[in-house]
Amino acid sequence: MTDADPTRVVADADVLAADVLVGGAARDALDHVRSHSWVTLVASDHLLDDAEAVVAALADDSLAADWRDRLEREREPVDHPEGDHAGLASAYQGRAAHLLSFDDQLSSAGANLSLQAHMQVSIRTPDAFARLFDAASLYEAIRDEAYPGPDRDPRA
Image (cartoon, rainbow, N blue to C red; front, side, top):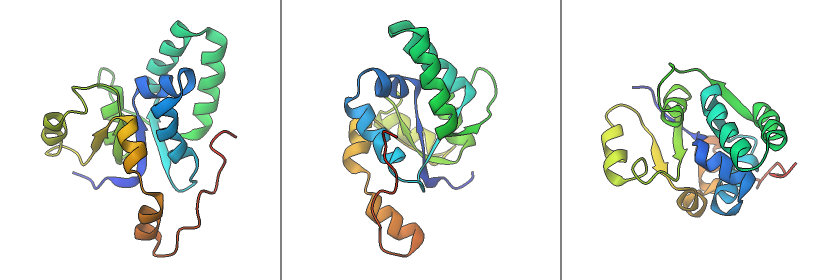
């Protein structure tokens, strides 16, 4: 088992779609990621395909395509076998320590515990991640220097 990197985050397709379509907790959580150049959003093509399909179905194809173009630039791509759960596989292949999901079964204590034997990942709802993510503490732990604050505009 490889060590997960606490600066690497995966957002499941439901969270990615909610970010663009609804805002709220999904946007708050992903704004933490987008606000810091040293935090990486990890996503496979399969994961983006799933999220793009949701955006297209609930909004329109043009918004889905524009959103996909932006995410292609923002994410670090990873590959995984066809048929794997796109969020879990992206986290595993991308060594992400965090997986954000609205799926109650995936974010349950039992699921989190059972996955620990295979991968180091914390699966949380976006609202929990947004509440608990402490950029200053994480930055100071990985860089051994004072946290300078956010260094990117999350909406740019």
